[in-house]
Length: 194
Image (cartoon, rainbow, N blue to C red; front, side, top):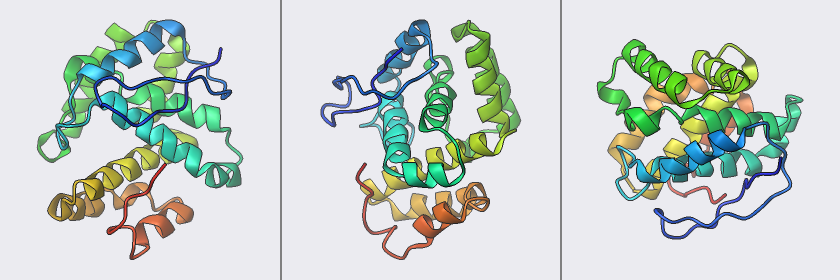
């Protein structure tokens, strides 16, 4: 199956899709659920929705595909992990990490995932990402945090950026190449364009 891995930046609520030759294992039913994330606003950026965040994360993964290749992972596998990880937010909404108990968040998102995803392989991807049980799932989670930091830079919200950098740095530690990106003095002043 071919699925769009590209995003035309435009109106956040009505993005356009184009076909890209990157393979995915995500089912058509799940793709339809993913597209409904266009209706779920982000907590930190009301002008953005969860779908735009997920697609932005995928665009960053594509931009840094050479780093993914260093570890011997396929880009499509990282993209599949990124695609399923935000699906529960269709039912739970985007939860603010500053005020959310991680265990309660996991339980609520697990309930939502079970109600949204019927394919067992896709459920396994979600569990793998959420638990960080594999190094490539941890890498995908680091890309999610990188996109979030990038989003805060776009908003010029330095207070929230500094909070997020302090709390999310742990996700980058296993990956020196990603640490180099966030430790670059210019990272906090310029937005990474996918």
